Image 1 (cartoon, rainbow, N blue to C red):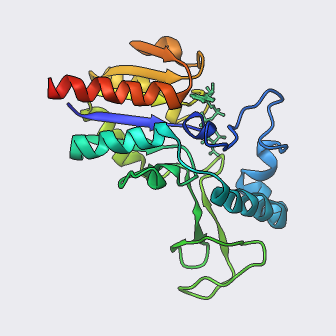
Image 2 (image 1 turned 180 degrees about the vertical axis):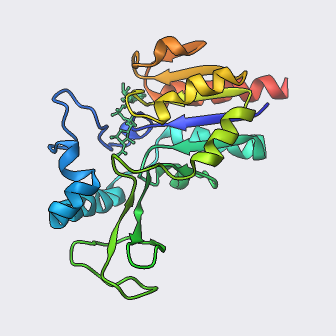
Length: 232
Ligand code: OAD
């Protein structure tokens, strides 16, 4: 059985990483169009850099939770047949033990050079305009996909969705496309679909099955169930 797992901010919530859509519609006090669009970066690069620099620095204060660890356990047991795609820009799946993670919205711990196009592993600040290690241009930007930009690796994701038998969405509101459309795409190609989320999402009715509760409890229980099924 081939499995595609899509994760969103909810899988990292219990680690202390804030989700995007809190009650007042702000992302950590900012309107998303002020920090997560190419136009915002053109207008106020210092503001955007500082916003992502703070998020990058905050990563060292958080740890993976049982949901991340359970998914890495599933990947290890299921070998090549689990494709893990995340909308998250944190690195908690990797620190939870996952080896292959497709970051469709980019990564905080990476910088993208607008001069040479290189993706560079980056752990410190960008607001002081450091040079690109490859071409030395001071053109580094956060390696994250902003609104209006195309997520990374859509061809690969679509291919995985077309061939999977089970599509599982974990901790995502189903508010942002193209990820919000994956459930319908996978179902149209014959996959069974399962949602694991804290509460009903915008897409809940599109899934064959939905389980609601915190990811730190739901995900390990679901992984145990699946692994018991194959071993039994
Ligand atoms: P959201 O903040 O939109 O949604 C988080 C979802 O996680 C909600 O449905 C919550 O109910 C759920 N949730 C919260 N705590 C949870 C927990 N402990 N266990 C399980 N679920 C929990 O985040 P995303 O759907 O990831 O894009 O947002 C998608 C994209 O919108 C992001 O990648 C980002 C953002 O704007 C870009 O920056 C391009």
